[in-house]
Amino acid sequence: MNINLTLFAQAFVFLAFILFTWRFVWPPLMKAVTDRQNRIADGLAAAEKGARSLADASVQTEETLKQARAQAQEILAGANKQATQLVDQAKVQAKSEGDRIVAAAHDEVVREVAKAKETLRKQVGELAVLGAAKILKREVNAQAHADVLSDLAARV
Image (cartoon, rainbow, N blue to C red; front, side):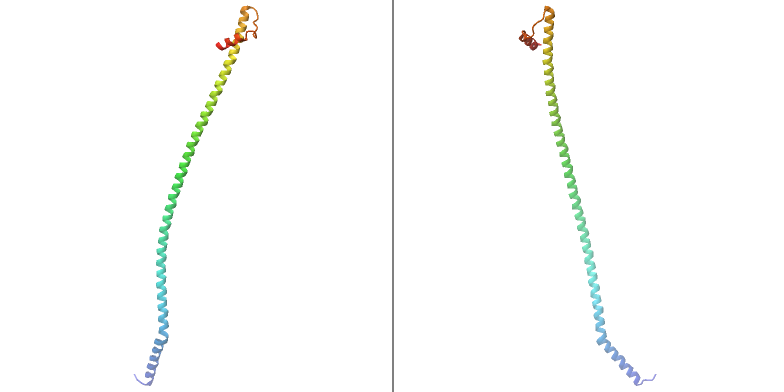
């Protein structure tokens, strides 16, 4: 192999190329690589933060659902209690209404019995007058003997 000036010129150009690359090309390349590493690290940190946030949101959602279920149970219990109270109140009201109807019917029966008794007294008085008329074979004046008939009706 022959060492001559071309070999030294090529070595000098190669050395100049290395210096140029080291001075002007290498720093922007390293900056781009460093920026990319930082973006990747930031993305990973954001992903971890998002995962933690998602887990927290999931826990918070479960807690909210538990509270909503408990509140729904309370509302149902209150509604059942109110329904029971309404049924009891309706029973009491129906009982009082039934008692009132029975009392009114009882009063009506008492009035009807009194009316029937009065009618029977009058009829018994008339029968007594008729019976007395037949016995005496003469007609008894009902107006003349009204006091006697009233006493007789009262006794019957």
